[in-house]
Length: 240
Image 1 (cartoon, rainbow, N blue to C red):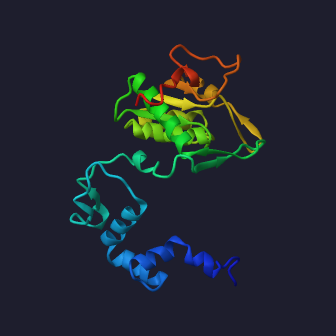
Image 2: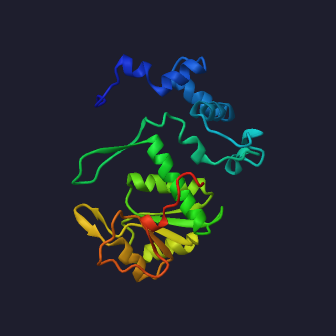
Image 3: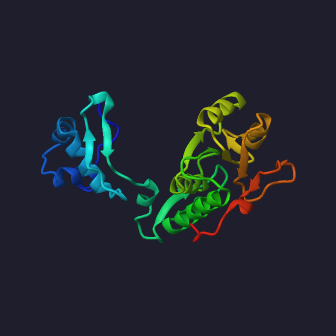
C-alpha cells in the first residue's frame, strides 16, 4: 500500500525534523529516534532550548532517572510559568485563526491574546484567587477559552478542564475531584448542530461560582448571586 501523501523535498528541508538533524549532526530520522531513546536527557534538553522555554530558575538537571524510569524527575530545581513562554512572537503576528459553524474565519494576534489573558489573570486576582487555587473551564474550544487558560496559568491557578459534552453527573464529579472554586462557563454551545445548555447544567448540580464568558447574556439566563458576567469579571489589562 502506498502512502496517501509524501512531502516534497522542499517541505522536508523546511521541517522541524530536518532542522533537528542539522542541529545535532545526524543523518536520518532513524538516527534521531535512536538518539532520543539512548540519550533522552540530551534529546529533551535540546528540545526545550529549541522551543525557547523560559525559566525563572534554570533546572539543575533536565531528566533524572535516579529512582528508575517509572519515577523520572523532570527539570529538577527549575521554577517557571509556561504562560511566559507562549508570547515570544511579534505582537502583530497571528496567534489563533478561528470561527464557529456559521461564522467566517477570524483571527487574534499574539498581542490581543496576551492582553486578554492578562485581563483574566487580573480578574482572578481581584476575585481573591491565589496561586494553587483550582478553577474550572466548562466551555467549547474557542479563542477566548485559550486566553482564559493562559490567564489562569499566568495567575498560578490550577486548571480543571471539562469537556462541553459532559452531562451533569460527569460535570459534578470533575468539579468535586478537581476541587474547583469557580468555573468559567458558556451559557450555551452547539455540537453537531444541537444546542448544549452548559450554564443550566451547572445550575442543576449547584456548581461553584460562575463567570459567564458570553459577550452578552440573554434575559432567559438566571444568574445567581455571586456569579459574574464577562464584562463584570474582566480586570485592567495592565494591572497584573
